[in-house]
Every structure is written in C-alpha cells, then in structure tokens.
Length: 171
Image (cartoon, rainbow, N blue to C red; front, side, top):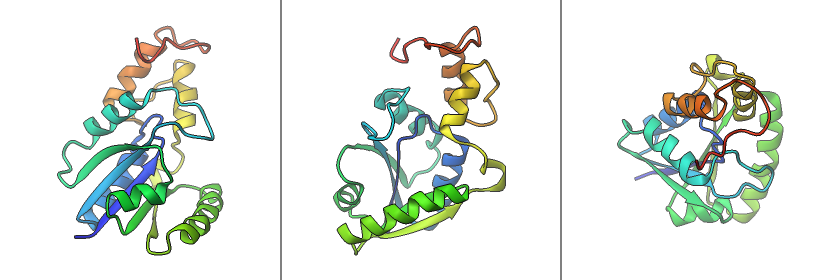
C-alpha cells in the first residue's frame, strides 16, 4: 500500500485544495490530509477543529482519504502515517519557489520521503485561501471558490459584507 500525505493549513480549504486531494486519492492507496494545528507563518482565521470539519465534509466521498491534525515537522507526520510520499499543489511560480526550498530541507531531514507536485487545474490556479478570505470579508461571493460549508460559514462571519473584525469563528 502506498500512502501519501497532503499537508497544509487549509484556512480555509478551497476547491483548489479539494481538486488536488481528489487527484492524489486517485493515484495513491491512502491519503492523509494533514492540517497544521498552529501554522508558524500566519494566524489562522478558523480554529483547527473547524478546518478539519470543513475538510471531512468536502472529502466525505473519498474512501481512501482521512484527515488528521499535526503540530510536528511535516516529515515526522509523514513517518507517523507510514507515508512514502508528500503531495503538494502548485498554482503559480511563487508556489514553486517556496516548495523548492521546502523540498530540499525536507530531503535533508527525510530522504526516504518523496515529494510529488500536482499542478493546479486551470480553473483553480488563481484561488488561494488568503484571497478567498479577503473577498468574503468585503461581502464578495465565494461560493464557486470553496466548498459549500465554507461559503456558509463566511456568510455567517460577514453578514453585512463589511471588512473588519469578523464574528468569532467559534461562536
């Protein structure tokens, strides 16, 4: 059995993320979607429990996909799940530059774990979690960019479509 992980903050999950995970699930026997509990590079809008719930709902039809939370090095998370492969999605050149650096660091730490890159489908190449959050905060429609549960949650967070402090995600 060949297992892979798909790590990310998923704050929130977008249809682009779902597309990459679905495609990985068609290639690998088992895919573990790893949700970073506390990302170092940015404070998440949604608590980890809600990010996991969004993913589980969006991926419910995929029998070989599970969602788990991690707070250790990504290579340790891969080892914990006996994953031989890490799957990462690429949208634009700047994604490649970042992932290129991370790949080399991860290879030093875990040369036995191979990283596979899945190019974004064209209709999702412009979709990012940060872009979706900004659009939603200004009352923009994000229904075609994120799973239905995420779009509903944004409508709850920004009922008047005004930027500023959103309603707390945990309310």
